Amino acid sequence: MSSTCSRAFGGWLAGCGAATAVISAIGQTLLMFAARGDVGRLLYGIVVLLIPSAVVFVITCLLTAIPAAIVVWLSEELRIRSAGFFAGAGAAIGALSITVLLRSPAVWTSGLVVLFAAAGFVAGLTYWFVVRELTARARFM
Image (cartoon, rainbow, N blue to C red; front, top):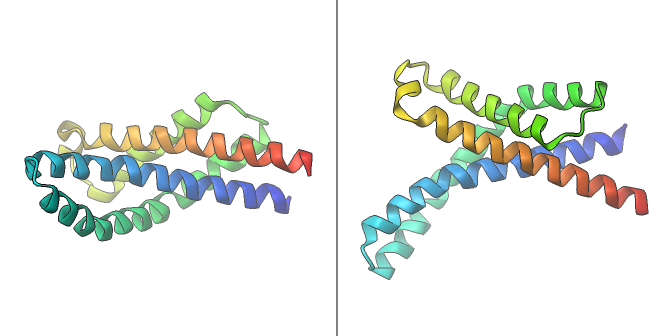
C-alpha cells in the first residue's frame, strides 16, 4: 500500500511537471517569436518566465490533487492500467481545472480549454509512464 502511494505521488508530481511544461511552452514559443533572433532578449525572457512557470506548477498541483487522487483510486479499484484511461482522465481534469479557475464561458471559445486539455493529456500519459516504470523497478528489487 505504501509503495503504491509513493509511486502514485511521484507519478502525479511528474504529471504536474509535464502539464506545466506544456502550458509554459506556449509562453516560450511566443517569446521566441517576439525576440526576433536577439539571443540576449530571448535568454532574458526565459529567465523572466521561470517564476510564472513555478506559479503554474503550484496552481496545477493545487487544482489537480483531488481529481487526480480520485482517478488513481478508481484505477486501483478497477485495476485499470491503460495509457488511454490516464490520458483521457488527464485531459478531462485539465479542461475542468481551467473552467473552475476562470469561470467564464469565454474559456471555451478562446482555446484555453484545448490547451489545458492537451496539458492534462500529456500529464496523464506522464503519470502512466512513471508509475509503470516505478512498478517495474519495484518488481526487480
